[in-house]
Length: 352
Image (tube, rainbow, N blue to C red; front, side, top):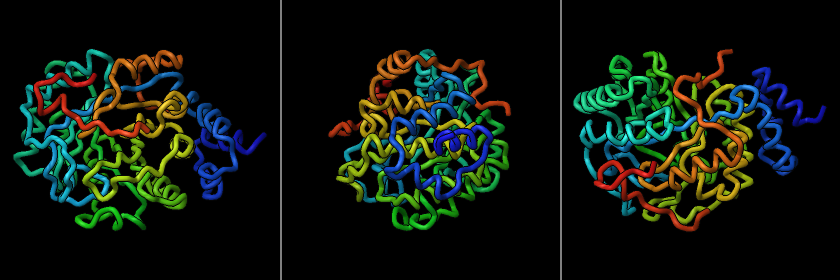
């Protein structure tokens, strides 16, 4: 049995790779196609050839008081993004409806800011209600920043299925990308959501200058938090942010990161998220052999590739879209970033 075959076997047995094994995945030792094949075997064991579709509805955009260096909505950002306050629940429900009609299973409601106040929670409760009135079966994931006591319970009672709060990078270097809140603040919010019975969703952003050790530290830390879904973002280096001009990633590097997370999270939803079109480019199809979930259409402040192209990509690769009645979890570079100008906050249809 080869080392990669052994790594796949361990993952299928839900055993975490050793640190040495994890670092070898990120290094040049293994051919990237062999790595994709080994990670793909794990993916098929738990998820077959299903791809889960997710979409983002950006309820409130820009003007955030936090200083996360990667974010176009951050304090001090001069990125020419759309800025608007809360959209109407009926408008949000309309955006969700269009996405669900093309196969989206999870709708992610996102709002900029440090965290919600009571009035914000009421707005989100109303939005969840409006979406659920049309599509009671849809999974609603909420991402509002740092949570206070009892807010997670209110979201759960309103019908939210999951709460998303990424760790983004390793604990050791978190202060390098954000100074207005801490790594521990993020862990605390994720724990509050989990305690309330919300499905925990937490992942990372890569391409911010992290080392291999940082990536492994983060993967192992996330494993301890036991999320149900792990979104993998690749930095979109917006002009007007501290990380503009950072184009550190290659398609191969992205595939190695995805493979590592599949070995660390064999039976968990690993999601291709922001920046995949920019950094994976023509190798997105290989990424589908590792990840079992993607965002369809646009992101928070940037546009993704057309939803029809994503659906064609899935079909051409021999995968199928996961239906709403199927269980998600097993029982056991383009050189230009396109700023979003459609969907939530506009009168133009979303890209789903």
